[in-house]
Image 1: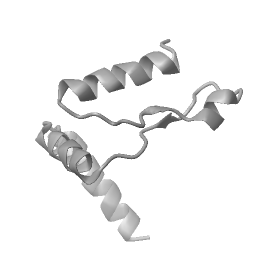
Image 2: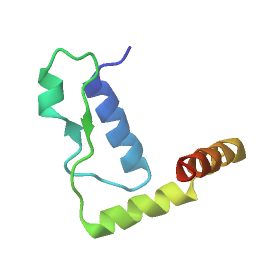
Image 3: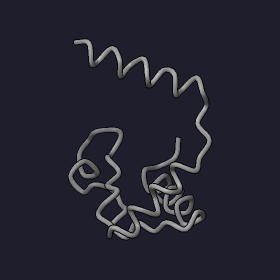
Length: 81
């Protein structure tokens, strides 16, 4: 299993690979210092240009139709409650 630090660096590299830099990306200091096995990853803050760029990258990714159908189903179920 990879460490939290390795996962954060992998995420940082992947984002940089598509031209997105989240300057505050890191490990949440509170959960990282606890005895919990999985610390939270703090995506941090970014300016509106970076948020827009991240949105564009995410929207450009192919989404499997089965996943899309499942999300729609869960949304419908939550609306009917």
